[in-house]
Image 1: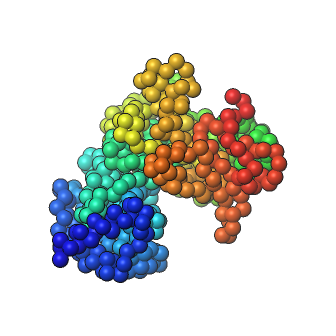
Image 2: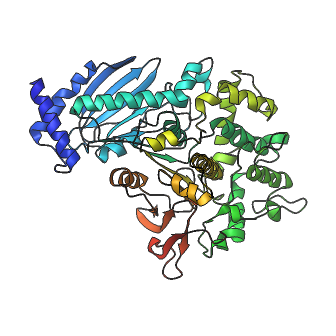
Image 3: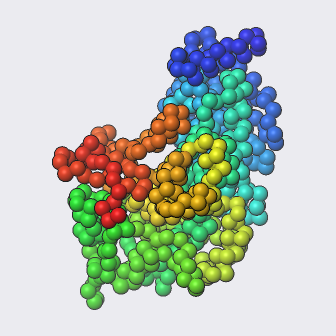
Length: 534
């Protein structure tokens, strides 16, 4: 029976990979169901599989969730790799596409990304997710688990996803008796950092990687963004803190000054770096403080957040946020200000990281952080484990893999400038490697395997005033499998189930340019071209 099943599974995989079949027969599906439980016997290094069971279609409810996910039937494998990297692998029973899609996390990880796995499963992928080695039930940015555990920091930074990827591909091959034809990774935020870490440290794990809004320069990001933005808001007894009620007027003032710079008034800043809005222009008159203006201390806080912080020698620690999208309810109000002082996600993230990852001191005072000595100490202590900042992607290139990075211009969490800076550093490495005589030659060579897409008006991974729904994975598949590099991707804004606006996302440094005719809410009326100021 086992021999018959292996032969049958091989035939199924070959048919699926060749595109001849998109589903399996009832008998074939039954055989796969019977084989699911046998996966507990798979031998993997330093790994124990605790369960392998068939999950009926639309019946799986994630822990702490109220309703079941919409999925096809699948084989669910639950395991752990030493010391405590928990993972799950989901294998479709009726319509495997012959490929694998690993998915990433957000925040401080610590959970299995069930929704992302369901999305991959619905596309026919075998898929897996990991908590990266710790439990995050204490909250999105709880970092207390890192106290005294450099091994868990290492797993969080890079090892957890790698060992899960190796295990998941082995389990997939065992189940179908056929290795995945292609392996892809998709993730945003912390998941973007995970994707870039894979590209830099483990370039053979994936044939293609999508890394969205990546927190790649992790230690500097937590110091020069999370911590710095919080200090700007909370110093001098919270004098710079901006109530959420002021954000609509603030956002409207920015749009009034800069929205039309790209020739279209649409609530979206095409290039926020061209916006020269001065926060002082909406400073409250002496003795006045209301929701339509900013106090002098609040003006200073915005200026600090936009400029970023430098060391005593003048080196920028991390790029500041850029103008645009301040009025988005899920933007500044959640990340920068919070409902009240000491509740913003920037403060929760920065304070927890340095308290537990770096200083491991429950009494640590975030206001005492020194951007010279403390930053250097942090970079040496945890930077090697968590910073995916290496621009040398030649091993990824030489492996034939492809990388897509996207970043929302209105991201209130991770500065979009950081992704541009990283891309430019990669271009420099490639240019030096090929002894390119000019930038354009190095750029074209880099774009043969790495393409950056900036998303005007998109917030942190989604949201914001601009179109924020697009299919980077399909673009990546077409690039990897058919050799067709994506020159653009269409993004849509969906409200109440309806597409209200669409725009092309262009390969950096090109931008979407209005043709001059037709609706500015329709992507067909735009084309990708070099910025007008180039």
